[in-house]
Structure formats: structure tokens, C-alpha cells
Length: 112
Image (cartoon, rainbow, N blue to C red):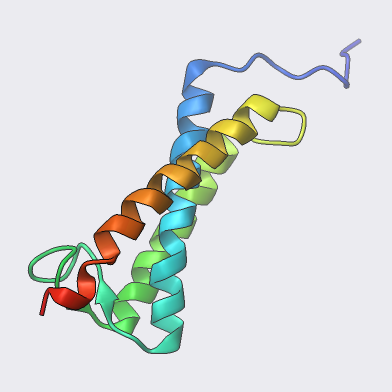
């Protein structure tokens, strides 16, 4: 009989998935917010990438892509409330991209 209270082993790649899940989900936020607000915002599809502004529609598509990838990685990372380590690594992914984007996007108004 299987023990329903135990959790299966957690491997290194689950932590990697948890980290990048946080990375992608946090990256979706500024693109989604600017897109639904109708504001142009930098994306990798602009020319030059990440510097020039993309249309709000492009930002929505980029945000939805990030949400989809983040969700799939969240599931692959087997993140849940019983895996505190995975939640911490997920948060580290969120914090990492948040700090990187705060530096990168703080310069966007001065680029053009």
C-alpha cells in the first residue's frame, strides 16, 4: 500500500525548474501591465532588442508566453506548500529577475 503522506524524491532539476518558473512569471508582470495599459515597453522583439519599445500587443503576447513557460516550469518543479526548499528557490528566481529588470528598465526612458 502506498503512503499518501510522503512526497516523491526531489531532484536538482526540480530546483532548477522552480528557479526559472519564478524568473519567467515575474518577467511577465511588467510586460502584461504595460500591454493592458496600452503603453509601449521594451521586449526582445524590438529593434534593438530589449532597448527600443514594442507595441502593447507585442507586450501582451510576450507576457502570455512568459506565463505559459513559467506555469509549465512550476508544474515541472513540483512546487507545493510541502516543499519549502522549492518555494524558497522559486522566490529566489522571482527576486533575481526583479532586481535585474529594475536596473535594466530604469534606463528605458533615457534610451530615445
